[in-house]
Length: 284
Image (cartoon, rainbow, N blue to C red; front, side):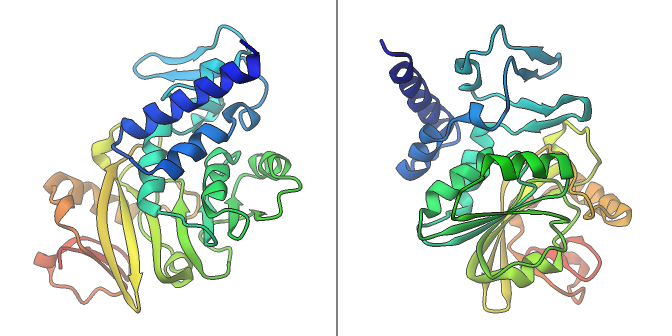
């Protein structure tokens, strides 16, 4: 069999496996995972794969077949910075629901693998703003999308970079709360995918992190917990006081009962899952 045809089959099998692992039945998402070449974003192999409880293990060769498993792959292993688990991102992208013609903002885009998947979902009529804080990664990100007409790369603090109204804002790092620019930047009906984490990285305990889907309806923000998470911290969006409050909130549980995000603190204590500076994730 021709090598290209063989890899195409492997990519299609990978896409089916990572979407099935989290119950995603959207064929558009499956097709996007099958179409984007992971090796194009992770540099020249061999690559280092995360083996939980053991550490990084190097692939036997540069054969890209090793990248088409539901595994975390190192980007900067000396900093524990990785290309996240494909099935988790399939789940989160499905919750974000990017549609043809929409605008996606990807904060913490890294080298752009999941950016590329969302770019395929919004299509040529849509666009993606990819924001990366780290200058070195931002350089790699820009190189990976050189010539792409519907992807704008920005190096900067994703909690402060301004952008045009977005239908999806996809945060790819652990914050202790929402940035004003994210909530202000959501279009009507827009979805914010927001990972909140109690402790700094490295933190392998997904019980101390959660991803919420925040949906805007006029001036109201509705919240749904969609996943646990252990993720690299979001530069500029870590507050020690709120981190402590999150630790207490994760101890008491009831994440599935969270339904609202309020942009004020006038919420009774019994209705508030966690309270930050000027905001609250609440039960009603």
